[in-house]
Amino acid sequence: MDLKQFLELFNPLPGNHYLLVTDKVDEVTNVLAELMQGVNGEFHLALYENEITTLQDKLQNTKLQSIQNISKPFRALPRDHDIVIIKDIMQIHKNPELLLRIAYTTLANTAEIIIMQKKGMMDVQKMKELLEKLEFRTPNEIDIVAGYDLVMAKKMHMWGNGL
Image 1 (cartoon, rainbow, N blue to C red):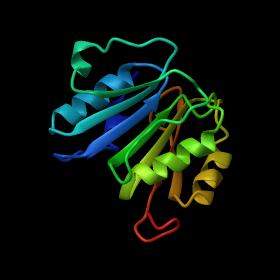
Image 2 (spheres, one colour):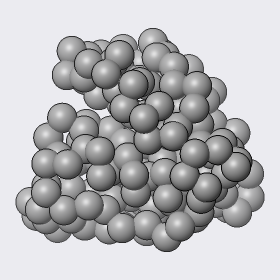
Image 3 (cartoon, one colour):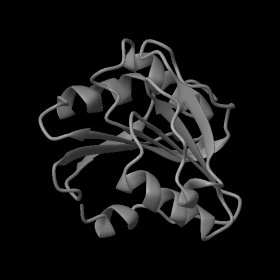
Image 4 (tube, rainbow, N blue to C red):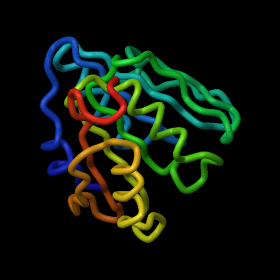
């Protein structure tokens, strides 16, 4: 998987916190962890899995939250993250709207959310409408990772839910 263009979406700064919510540790997990380590940022991983995973050495500094039940939400502190990436979870989670509400709450003002799903698994237009409904702004589809649909949106300061 070529992630060069994907990584151009990010401009991490020291002290930034990125959160990846996914069902597997893969190349995306590894490159995001390395990216955050390179700037002394924090990489948080909310991993939906059936068994506890032993993280690879390159993920040693990752803050792992293991979630055993696909109907449960992930946990995150309010306004604690600069970017939330939700990958391959929206189509299998029992309450995808709840995931987006939690993401909204944990994002800092003007922070971004990225939804990644395997091509054909997500109705992109409906996802953009759902993001708008939940007070995210400027949802856009981005075609930069082969085999994946990406939708990106922004939480704006003083808009919507007032968080």
